[in-house]
Every structure is written in structure tokens, then in C-alpha cells.
Image: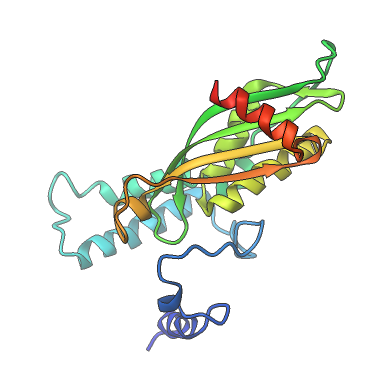
Amino acid sequence: MSTNTLNLKTRDLSLNDLSITDIGDDHLFTGLETPMKADAFKLSDEEKKERIAILFEEIMDVMGLDLTDDSLKGTPKRVAKMYIDEIFSGLNPVNKPKVALFDNKYQYNQMLVEKNITFYSNCEHHFVPIIGKAHVSYISSGKVIGLSKLNRIVQYYAKRPQVQERLTNQIAEDLKAILETEDVAVIIDAKHLCVSSRGIKDDTSATVTTYYGGQFNTPEKISELHNYINN
């Protein structure tokens, strides 16, 4: 038995005192940081793509697919490129958007709301899509951020294997650090294909997660924010 197989069997016996079978389709939120190995960036992106292509080709072969077929033979490399350069590019901190702050010369001291930011992420438990919209708001502490950067920050954290609760908090904590204010709110409304396309196969439900910091953590501000979002 290989070491990897042994480790998988050991983890199956106990994971936070629950087996993988006990957990089933339930999502675990183990912490704010995306779980990463200490040597996660030992390999270059090109080296990672080469290895992923080899491994994905093996998966396809095990499933019985004919890798000599013209339609399939390029798939392993396409998947590897997609994983590293696109849908999981947010794992690499070099891809974090560079953000410049500007003085709030307009003296705009009310909430700014960027709503309906479409994002595509992936569930870290089944590696199938999470599709949703993020609504982000902040109250300036003297500095403002370019509107497009709010979208880019959402996309950066979405482009990694995720849990929605973690995604919500990661966006909020980063904005708080960048803007040097606690007055940040994040609302995410998303559909999980691990729920709609497999498992319980419920295509009508959606998941909403929220973060209300500083001045936003009052009934009045929450109501005002939701009025902006819904109108």
C-alpha cells in the first residue's frame, strides 16, 4: 500500500473527530486562510501545469476514455492550463491585484456600494462550480479605492477552491486592511453545483453569507445597505 493511500485511509477514519463518511456533503469551514502546504510554490506554474496534465491524463485513462481521439487528446493540457492560469489563479499571491488608494477629495462620507459582482468559484469539497454575486460596501476613512479594484479583489479570492463563508470573510478582511477601516460589508449570494447537480440535486436553493463590520453592524445600516442592493 502506498503512503498516499495509507494517508487517505487514515484521514477517512478521523477528520476533526468525524469521518469523511460522517461529514458527507456538509461543508467544513476550518479557518480564514485557504489551506496551503508550506512548499506550495516550490514548483513554477509551468512545472505545475506539466504535472497536472500528466495526472489528469491518468484520471481520464482510468475512466476508460480514448486519449488518442482528436477531441480528447488535448484535454489534459487544457485542464492544467485552466487550473493554474484561470480558475485557481487566486491561490498564487503573485496574482493578487495591486491596489492604489486615493484621497477622498469629494468628502463623500456615506456608504459606497458595488453590487452584483458576478463571480465563479469552485467548491473545495467536490471541485465543482460555485456561481454567484457579491455585494461589497465601505465607508471611507479618508481614502477611496478604484471601483474596478473591488471587483478584482472579489475575483482574486473566488479563483481558488473555496467555502463560501471563508470567501466572504477573506474579501472583507482584505478590504479592511487595504482601506484601513472596520466599516466594510460583504454579502454573497451563490448557487453551489455540488448541491444542484449532484447529491441532493436541489436546483432552486441558494446560499447567502454576510459580513458586517464597524458602522455596518447596526440594524439601520444593514437596512440601508439592503435597500441599495435590492433597488
